[in-house]
Amino acid sequence: MFAFITFFCGLLFGLGLAFSEMTNPAVVLGFLDLFGNWNPSLIIVMVSAIAVGMIGYFIKGKRLTPLFANKWQVPSLRQIDRKLVIGSALFGIGWGISGYCPGPGLTALVNNPNEGIYFIIALIIGSGAHHIQTRIVKM
Image (cartoon, rainbow, N blue to C red; front, side, top):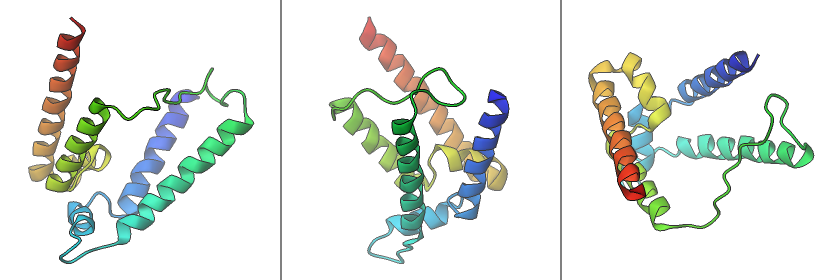
C-alpha cells in the first residue's frame, strides 16, 4: 500500500509540474527575468504549493499519527545557519542558470535529453561533493 501511495504522490507531483509547465526551463527562466520578458506564472504554482503545504500542516495538527506511517516526518531544525544559507544560494544559482530544479530536471532526461543529461550530471556531482564534504567534516 505504501508503494502505491508513494507512486501516486510522485505521479501527481509530476503531472502538476508538467501541467504548470515547470518542466520547461524557458518558463522558469522567464519568471526569473524581472527586467526583461517577465513571466509571472510561477507565482501561481508557488502559491498553490504553499496552500497544499498549509493543508498538510493543518491535517498534522489534527492527527496524532499519519494514516500510512508510524510518525510524522517534519524537520526539527528551526534556525537559519550558514549551511542553510549557502545551500539555498547554490540551489538558487543553479536554478537560475539552468531553469531546472531537481524534480523538473529529471523530466529533462525525457523532454530534452541533450540538455537534461548535463543537469543530471551536475546534480550527481554536487550531491557527491556534499556527501564527501559532510564525511570529511565529521572526521
